Image 1 (cartoon, helix red, strand yellow):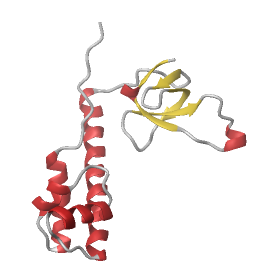
Image 2 (tube, rainbow, N blue to C red):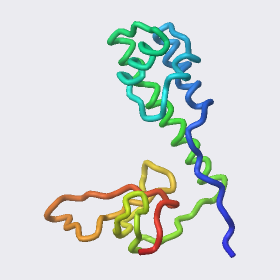
Image 3 (cartoon, rainbow, N blue to C red):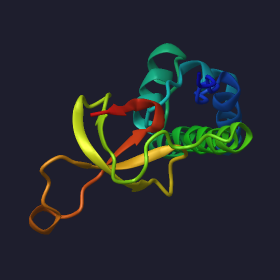
Image 4 (tube, one colour):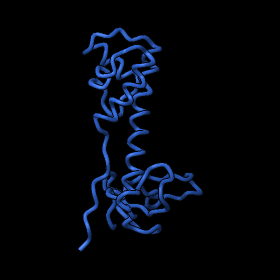
Length: 150
């Protein structure tokens, strides 16, 4: 019987607040308010619009560009947490390179061609039927826990 691995880290309130504090210092704003209105994946424009609408800010273009950094910082913190999760829990790929798998978030089948250099515990998967010489090299990034045997 295989051992159940701890779940992959997700974005936390602490990650969001830390990112908001960095940006708030640059635009002389309240980090808690930025963190309250930020949702993972928001760009600076979306965050500025939320702050304008719900926190009654009057954001400038410079503020919007600074707010763009929040999502980048949150993503960087998440990547670090995932790297640590892999190291601490000795996360190993469940399928070898060359295995034919289904990427469950896409509900499509492909072949594992390698591991991502930039995303922890993530496969590079070549879509089934893709001819690299005709269409160029394209790979899906599928997290280990998002694939199953095809």
